[in-house]
Image (tube, rainbow, N blue to C red; front, side, top):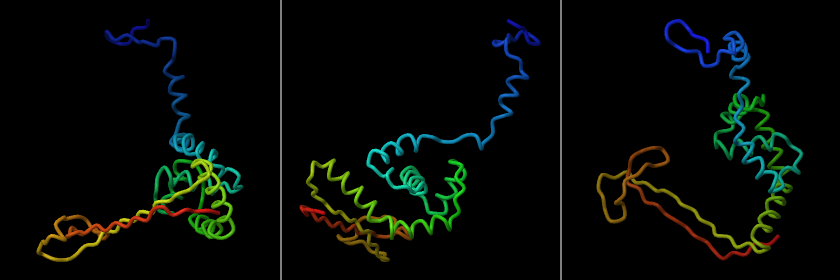
Length: 172
């Protein structure tokens, strides 16, 4: 073992400091990419069958939105910064137009076929909707006992209204 100045021992004496500095000088933020979302959601994406859609942007957007549900602008920024994909926001908007038009039937068919397979050929659906209503009042009554945040982030009296529909059989 090599001795450094003083009583400190150098653990890795066979490696020169210059070599270590050389390796670290090659690293930069642009060379670091998070791979978790692609490893996990990419496999699910392929398993469902969406990989048959020949649109690379569709894959990037689906996986990004599953991992980080952000706005379109922030998603484009995420893809640029962390995935190294230079995608302009206008490209995203144009693609979403294409998705809602030409690609929608294909996406729906893949989704429906996979859901049918997973559920053993029979689909029963439960629809659930929760709406938060708020009232600007200074008095509390039996209907408005709970305080909460509205969609506008105001701390007001809140009523939560829930709607359930069930036992609707869906066929294609």
